[in-house]
Length: 224
Image (cartoon, rainbow, N blue to C red; front, top):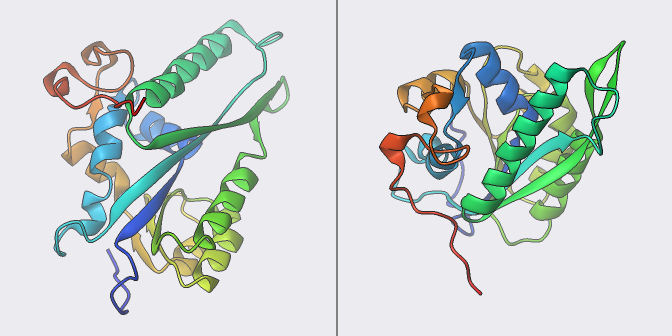
């Protein structure tokens, strides 16, 4: 990990932006047939950046998870219909069980020629990054992604004097995105494995996020 020099942040608060499509591709490619334990993943993510620093150097005020689902699956092959259902259940799980996490859903379209393609999710996420930075309520933004499309939003965030930290994997990473961010961690896949966050689906017992060995983790709390 490369840490750039700088002064202490105005606040120790950060907003986390996760490209869910990227996470799905990473897990599918690196760990075929396995599943991410998403609740402990989100709970431990900032440990990557806080390692070796003062406790709670960065503390997430809110995490945003971006992904895409179709309006309907008419005309989809059966295997894609099942994949869509699985992803919808996964996103619903995050909504229902993960504290301080908002799921932002874009659209995905299907064609025989192109298969599944997300529509506008990166633009949606990039706009939110820029807007969040300019609220002045966070000192840091943590980005979990690898696409160069996020470079403009990172640049806008930095112009608001917000530090941007990239958590990703080196394979397939946009070098422009790496260069644009203030700090970067490039071994996300290795960290997932070392942190025991990848499991057989049969071990995920609570509907989508936590293996039985971690079932004591706190659920989403209600303020009502």
